[in-house]
Length: 323
Image (cartoon, rainbow, N blue to C red):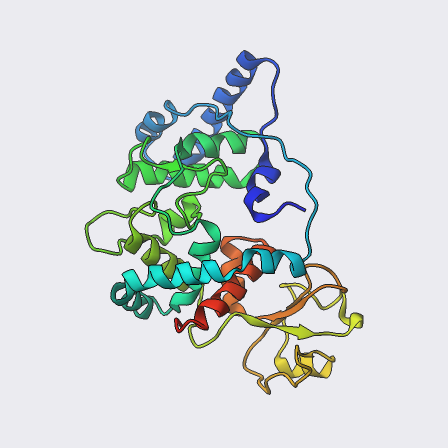
């Protein structure tokens, strides 16, 4: 199983093509097809051509390397460290008044944004992204990942209408943007100007990064009256028929099926929430009841290991007095 750091590369690794000339000819033809899709989506044809003529085949990609998959019992303690929680606390304290105001505006608890930031990219102001997003997205789409066709069109819209030049709109090797690993679609649809300077910089501006993360969660349906979920005990008979995010039931229904709190206590006696049981490591591994907020996070970065690490880190940050 590929962990989150390689999930995009594993799904769309570029093949090493022996004939570079043929590869570039095929790529050029493919970009023309992407350009047609962009034009058909309503973007001005002449402006699309101005963007696509700058697109180059992105070669800085590696084939996936086989790696063993640690269990959550190993992964979470390794990733969810006290150092990350303390770093998040110190970072929050630098911008506490502004971050708190943004969190109140969008209805998202600070600890979840901080946990994402810590897990996805740390709090460094140095951004390693140096590759034109349009080229990266087109190249991964050329390799066969259809999702990047959508991201390419989003990149074109950002360049034409979003105020970014081709060279300013840069991504890392996985086609993600900034320390919170935004997709082009996220930047296009839910990123916001957090400090009112008229620009949206999700690479180096802390207020823009924070506000954009908050708004993307808000747009996804975040509910700040709830948390993310909880670890539970569950009978083996539930696996696999009733597990996974596609199956939802009330706490009372899960209770009737034998699910209990991790300390063996009863689940909340609530009928108003539809929650899911997930077992990323199978029936012998950790089991979690997760709420809608977890789903919102998962939609942005669909990796249960990463999402559960973020969830656990949010609890560690909360223990430091940041809700």
